Length: 540
Image (cartoon, rainbow, N blue to C red; front, side, top):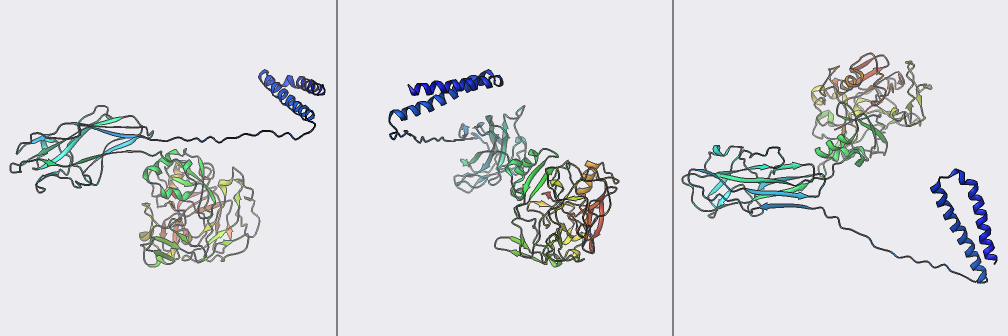
């Protein structure tokens, strides 16, 4: 009887509770909530009663579990069907040209991103382009260029022709030669719809060619396409160097124009925003913050060190391991760390690599003043150590002289004729592997082309203006007025001006740079190489 009273009491309490909250619940929630709570409270009281009935004897709950194996087979399908199996020219008369029967080659697959069908001559037993007589001496050789059947005029040659059902109006192609090394793509699709090719050959015989049967093999190969890579498949900047041309194009096209994506530099795990801009390139939209150290070599495994063949002064400081083709460069001077007062003091030397680490500073975005600021000795109103979602782009990063920027121990020995990268040739830099320095030339307002990539961005986002930089310091470019390290080793003009190094020499001891302030934009300026400036990189 006591158990029954406990249950009734619990239900009365519950109903009272339910009435208090009923006005706050929907009808569906009301029913579900009431039912569940009643069951739970009733069960709890029944369990209590059961315990009393058995006079507090040990009662163990039964627990049962069983593992059920699961699995499945993933079976991508790809089939090639050829009908009939042989190409035969039944009656090739001396001094004439004739074609064969037609075979149909069809492909079916469930690979969603498409496939290619290609043809080559030969297999493991017939590894050449000839159709060979049983005597193994006399041959018909594959023609070397496209030709019409009527113009297959060279004696004892053969060629192929095809038409596929992908074309809106399928027509026969001209007769062509087949290689036993390079595949001839007969069709290329980006989906998994079935396709087919009609295929035939033709041959021309001389008057003196021996009679008999001439044989050979044509190999048809279908290959499914992998799922295209996107920017979401990439975590590190160096991955760009591993992409082939198809995947690189796919990754770039997957990036929304002018939108930022975050990638890591594998060398120190620092993160950077990168953006596909309107010039078609993917740029860092954050300043490089790599600390250079004399006890940590940079190598071509993770750094933009491509060219070990340059000789003379440029090769100073490099090592090249011929066994694994690894290029290494070890900076002779440690990065000057301003906050911790460590490292090598800045020296006005065009030939030595120097850099400065100001610490984790961010520009606060205040565009109201243009007063020069030197926060190596005094506080700077234009800089803040508060990192937020909106100003992470505005990281000051590190400052590098031009020799450090191009990973060189003798930068001033380089001239425009020995180093300039206006054609985007591989050259060395401290950018991550797969990335490079931008280019600058004497062209100041370029509508198209790439010889002055800073000027190109200024044209696209700032209408080529030379009297304002408001579009340069805002989304999506986020260039930073980080100032520069001057000839006395101090940081000056922070918050009011800046300069970005390119890959381009101006002349002995000087290099081009992008120069801009609140009132001036000059993408063709040049200055002594020993100044410390900011660096941004472009995906190769």
